[in-house]
Image (tube, rainbow, N blue to C red; front, side):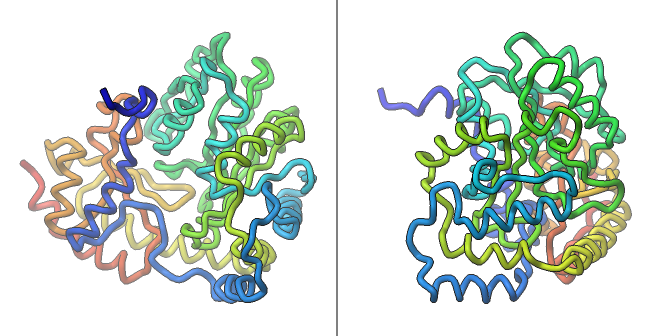
Amino acid sequence: MLRISRKAETFTESVIREMNRLAVAAGAVSLAQGFPDFPCPPELKAAAAEAVAADHNQYAITFGAKPLRDAIAAKTARFHPGWIVDAEAEITVVNGATEGMIAAMLGLLDPGDEVIVFEPFYENYGPDAILSGAVPHYVTLHEPDWSIDPDELRTAVTPRTRAIVVNSPHNPTGKVFSRSELGLIADVCREHDLIAFTDDIYQHLIYEGEHIPLATLPGMRERTVAIDSMSKTYSVTGWRVGWVITSPELTIGVRRVHDFLTVGAAAPLQQASVAGLLMADGYYDRLLADYRERRDILLPALETAGFRVHRPAGAYYAMTDIRDLTDEDDVTFARRLIEDPGLATVPGSSFFSRPELGRTKVRFAFPKKLETLRAAADRLTSIRAATRT
């Protein structure tokens, strides 16, 4: 009998990307998938064209072209003084942060190992662990501020626990983990000899608080696997250029898996990415200001429409509660919005291991043109009167 693998049977295709496909088919305004609908910086377009013209069209070094690794190391030290990274031994360039996470898990975890994942979560983390043969163990972030219960976190650690996943700023909630919360996580990692996989791709999008790399906390550098990419900071989600920074001992495992998983990221885009990493501080200031403006368009429109909104401190998502609007579950509500008034979001249950925890929630993404967000706001005005069943 022909069948798919038992691993693949344990999870579905991405709900986020499914909702975006449904939106495209219906001609709806999509605030589902988190990618920009506006152009990337012109400097990057020019750099990509120049790289192709200069014949950077064959394989780069498997673990990353040296100019890019050098630029990653320099940018890391520039934004996080004291964190000095060895470009030769501690950086692996990968096909986006998505491959970075799965390559790191495959290279560092054994079958049966347990991985702590905070929920709500970005939907890739559980399947990444499962594909690695590991077992995800979920710890709830508690509303209204998505806080960690220290006792719950410590209780989640078992003799089989090997790692913990940390995403700050956080998708889907927009939470920025505080220094004390990161200190708690670091304490647990040191006490139990755990690896920390940190997804840092929204580090330049913080409206309140600060981004503190877990690797910079005492005793954490050698056990942190820091994952980042060009995608969200430079509006090039389709380039698929990311990187993993970790100790030389752990880098060995990441590089071996990456080599056989994808061989390498696109050579001309690796060359072009250097131009982004060398951008002056003004670029990041403008990026944040632009996203703050987008946030300030969407959030009031959601509140006026009757959503309970968790105000994001970082990233570019708004997690909302729909219980004041409808008695429908999140999936039914989200699918109906695509049809009328023509607006796509993501059902909250897709971010939880127990779907019932997200049945009254939906997530909106706002990395969009101002006119896209205003069109979404216009469609939101019709929701309050139409959604109560």
